[in-house]
Length: 106
Image (cartoon, rainbow, N blue to C red; front, side):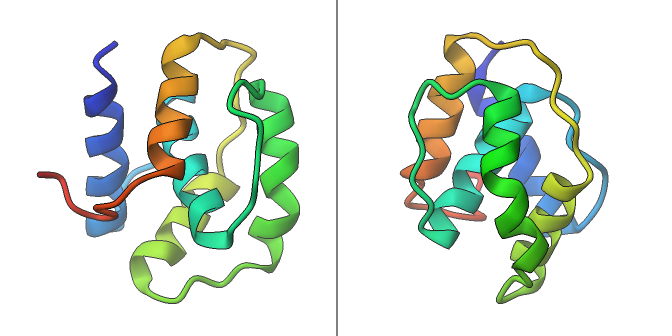
């Protein structure tokens, strides 16, 4: 898996407000972004179900300050992660947590 593809996919979906998350790779990047926006801390090697449980209460009370954030919340709220986990998901979570160019593909 090329991690930049998962990142680009999430950004395009939020920019266009279209589609759904298509796997745990996209989920991890999107969850990292959400945690950054909401200032949530997490362990970098958190498993999918634990990550979902961590963000779910915040997703329920979040509204998003703009349409892109609102769509990110929608994407995450509608996704149920599988048990699949590997080091690239950790990489994507960290990328989202530390993203400096939110919503920019280049």
